[in-house]
Image 1 (cartoon, rainbow, N blue to C red):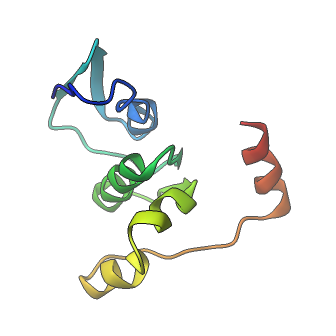
Image 2: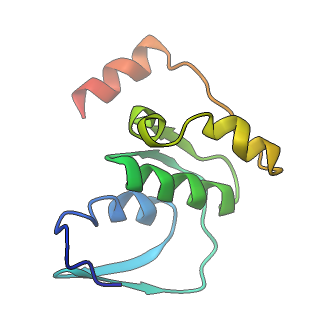
Length: 107
């Protein structure tokens, strides 16, 4: 996949790799090898499209995926939890503990 518009489009690739995705970035291109089984992980959405990709990957993954930075997702997808649940997904929103909030501030 090659992106000729926005050079930083692939900054969420590391988050997908945490989920066992086999992706290599070369310049403006991402080389995706598969199939692989994605595994649930703690990941962070860095922007709207990255958040959407992580939600989809999380739904495909085995286990639970925790996504922080959901404010990015909320900006572009209203009522995403309810809509995906309506399609049969198992997805929910939880409040972060104060310790988790501090950890996010540090990163």
